[in-house]
Amino acid sequence: MWRRLFSKPAEAAPPDARLTPELRARIQASFDESAQDEEHFPSTIDPRIYHVKLLQEHLGPLNGKRVLDVGCGKGRFARLFQEQEPSAEMWGLDISEEMLRYVPSGIRTQAGSMTDMPFAAGFFDAAYATESLEHAVEIEKAVAEMCRVVKTRGRIAIIDKNAEQWGKLATPEWERWFTRGELERLLRKHCREVSSRFISYWEDVEPDGLFLAWLAVK
Ligand SMILES: C[S@@+](CC[C@H](N)C(=O)[O-])C[C@H]1O[C@@H](n2cnc3c(N)ncnc32)[C@H](O)[C@@H]1O
Image (cartoon, rainbow, N blue to C red; front, top):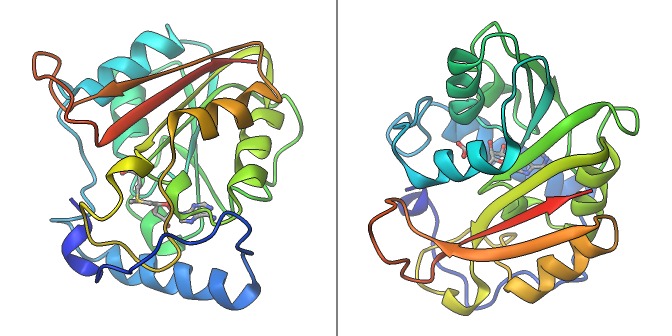
């Protein structure tokens, strides 16, 4: 969906890449600019899309819960969850303040990097990241941070792309995709239950191997 904006690099960013201040500023500027592009960076999502359903299924009822959307962009998932469960306390964290301008007012927003979250340990009942971890550069740090800010027995979900399909879409030079095993291993360092599965946009369409979901309980 976001792909026409970027040219395709030969290689994915290496696993030991660093989110230097210069790279962070570049990523931020890129997404600040992309915020104006509603076609490729939409503010809403069709609730029938399986990514939404799977998050709802794994996170369970959100009423009365404090939930973090990590790399929330314009908050298309959080917006829907807030509409459906108004007593949920939804939060969105994103590196791009321009993206956060589009997040509806009922959702609390925080500008910052998922590799260094400005939240206390165990502050959230649950956290999820959709197509944002792939931009975090310091992936192990970002996964550790997601797990740190969620309380024990809290639920964590990551939806992102499969490294085995690298090259299928154009990507910026900092982007990385993941194998099932890679993120499972990172999540297992902090979580008691971890699984992953291939998913597609529609429940009745066989996954083509591009999208993966990792589901965990801390
Ligand atoms: C492809 S968009 C996905 C947005 C949203 N999760 C969605 O599904 O609509 C990726 C988002 O990750 C954000 N992002 C990139 N690097 C980040 C970082 N280190 N920390 C927090 N957000 C980041 C970008 O600003 C952008 O809004």
